[in-house]
Length: 310
Image (cartoon, helix red, strand yellow):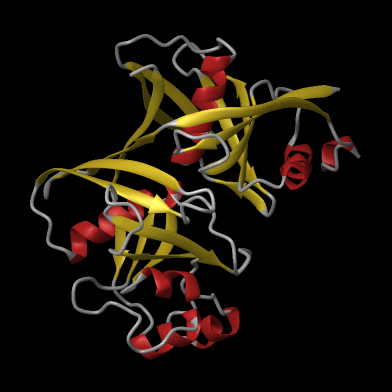
């Protein structure tokens, strides 16, 4: 059976920039093993599979990277919304339109709107971050990341473990040069004092940016991420926001900033983040931006490798 897919460049206004995401808008009939094989074949950072929703949910989303299933993040929501609007499966008007997606039992809220003829999508969520300050010391971090003693920021921000469903080690660095020299060493991590903490990915960031519009430059590192790769950072943004609130003493109220991922010459993404911080309430976060549809086609479903099919 053939399945139609679309390729969407996310968090950019220009084709062939931003993060490449594959979206299968009618994935009904595919099982886990087939979706994993397709994600490996597409070889994009994320492949989104869209299943029928319910009266209250526009669609159910499943997200796979070549290495395995992932949580639905802002990149996957923006890509799915752009595809569903293109295929007229989602209506949208000049006014803000609230849309609900799901991943399992989790409901994911999004806001769609047209601004100057462009479709903007914002992922909206409330999170209760779990923060752990028991982290590797600076010497250990230098070994884990392959960096020098002057590369890790220790005055303006602190390294933290932060979890909003998925745990991240969030490490502030002092320059973009350090961000791109950083390399994850599993061997050094296994020797570190915090090696027992189940963290699959490290988010490194700095205040130095390429664009005058942006406030921070981010990059994800991990055991299964190539040294020269810069995968989407959307899923880590709630944890990043929580780390800023904790280490920078942000006042209660609404805050807005812009993030960049990747270099301008290599598919840079620009994300707008808005959040409401209240000491007595959950952290409310909105992550949004543009997306451009760049390709569409079809693929033959692979043979299932699931036990049920045996």
